[in-house]
Length: 155
Image 1 (tube, rainbow, N blue to C red):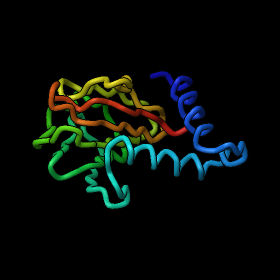
Image 2 (cartoon, helix red, strand yellow; image 1 turned 45 degrees about the vertical axis):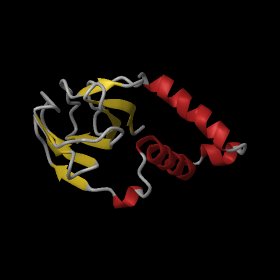
Image 3 (cartoon, helix red, strand yellow; image 1 turned 45 degrees about the horizontal axis):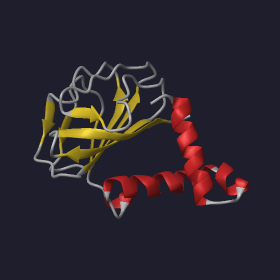
C-alpha cells in the first residue's frame, strides 16, 4: 500500500473517531487511535503486555511465534533475504504478530518469503531510512500464512 493511500485511510478513521479537527491533528490522539486499531486487528487486549523479542540485525531474523507477539529489529544493517527462513512455532488461526524494523541509516530491502502474504495490505519491500517500520499480521490457517493487515513507517 502506498503511503498516500495509507495516510488517507488513517485520516478517514480519525474523522469517524471524533468530530474535533483539533484532536484529529494531535499526534497523541493518532498514536492512541493506532494502538486501539492494532489491538482490534490482532485481538490483543493489552498491548503493553505483549511478548516481545528483539535482535539487532539479521538477513534471516529469528522469530518464534510460540514465544513472541512483537519482534523488533533495532538496527538493521543488511537486507533481509528471508523473514521465513528462521520463522518457527505453531501459530493458531487469527494469531497476531507485529514485526518492527529500524534500519541503521540506510534503507534495507525486505524479502518476506513463503510464510507471509498480502491480506489486504501489501508487504513492504524496504525500510525507509531511519524510520521505524511496523507491520501487523494475522495468521490464516487456511493459507498457512501470516497475512499483512497493516504496514506503516514513521513520518
